[in-house]
Length: 423
Image (cartoon, rainbow, N blue to C red; front, side, top):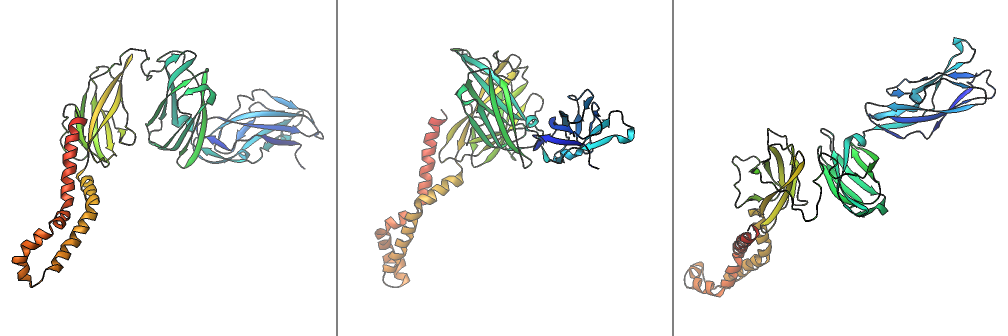
């Protein structure tokens, strides 16, 4: 005999984030031909799977008469990612006026879905007001990977509504956001709130979330917010102790007139900032995109270390400025570190060899041609003909040695240019 009670799912979820409550809605229908009414007891939904169940929207007993229907909603939450199914939820139905043996347990219809990592918990979002421009507000948006040791891949942030953004990026993408890493940008917006659609890949699982954030009404509304902007007000600068040393080599690198000489081609260095402010609580060092990458290291005492990777490998010396913030109670102080990125010897020799390859090949060919034109035995070549050979083929000999000449020329130009670049 079939049950007079039927259950239909209403817009079931396809994915549920780990550690977050998701709501499953369903409609319970009692057939017209049912012999009696049924009572749905408050909190009468349980799970035979691994989900925790919340019945806070189902707090009173409900009585269904034959032919009636009711829609219910229960919350589910999971502690780990993996497959799940709404069929793991069961509903208790007790006949009104019936006996205990007539009680019925109804399983919800099957609907497989995925339990995925939570981007809501993995990506921390902060908006801080900087200043106002009439009816528009400039805010700083900061997105931080809040996971302890998990990288976020293919991070995409879309800002909306588009007609409310007066200036700033509408879409920002990062291929990789390491644990503790940040994405920062400024926006000038109108309206009371900003919509932030975020997506990423966590442990191979694509996830997304929409964040609605109110535009802060007060400047410096967040503890890590930048200092309030004032027109014609100079920035608060700080002078701190900064040390740099090459990874894997003992001894620090001495600064020359406040500039640290570094090599490029993905060389790694340890940079340590020791703030002069006695109440400093944090230091944020910002990278130079495409030239210098920055990774924070474990803080020690009053020192904030960073791993700096010089990805650029220029032909001539270039000056790179790294900005950093020192966060202190009631203030954010701005500091600067200047790096002199110098070309490696390999780079210079490679350019010299490339530039002189054609001339060198021509010089070698000319030399062998000259030898072939000399008449007589080898001792004649060593004797009277040798001077004639040199005098006739001096240009071929010069071409044969053009590579070290070009290399020396690059060195002279770089040394002269370095004087102006480093000041």
